[in-house]
Image 1 (cartoon, rainbow, N blue to C red):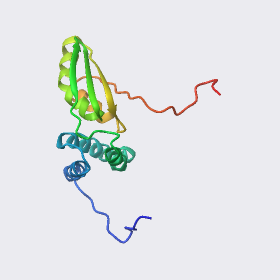
Image 2 (cartoon, one colour; image 1 turned 135 degrees about the vertical axis):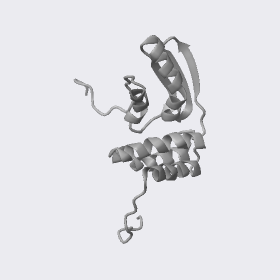
Image 3 (cartoon, helix red, strand yellow; image 1 turned 90 degrees about the vertical axis):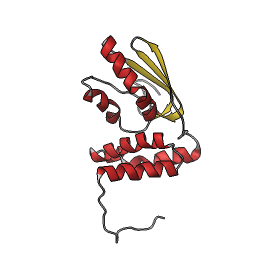
Length: 160
């Protein structure tokens, strides 16, 4: 049973303070500073934007995945330039967001030169909001879609 904090006043922190706090939490729990930077920004932006289900609410899940070894918090993604409009990243059992961050500039260059670009990330774990993944592309005047695989949640039509 957890201790009650009802008698303690709510504390408000600024967006930069939240990013710094989350970054420090991720590092203490086994993420590299580089990975922690990306994850902290992602969680803080979701919280800032009102998606509490994908903001700090997700921190226990991140931390348990690090503690169990399910995810390598120090993984360094390997970016592969596959073709004129295709980039592939091996996240090396790390989180997907740092893999995307590692490929972002190459992907933007390819989209500008080829008119389209595709990124495939493998060996990754992603359970965060998706709009922070695509906003940097929109800020560059590009259209981006982001998709992740997930557990089956609905039985296919006609299945038993």
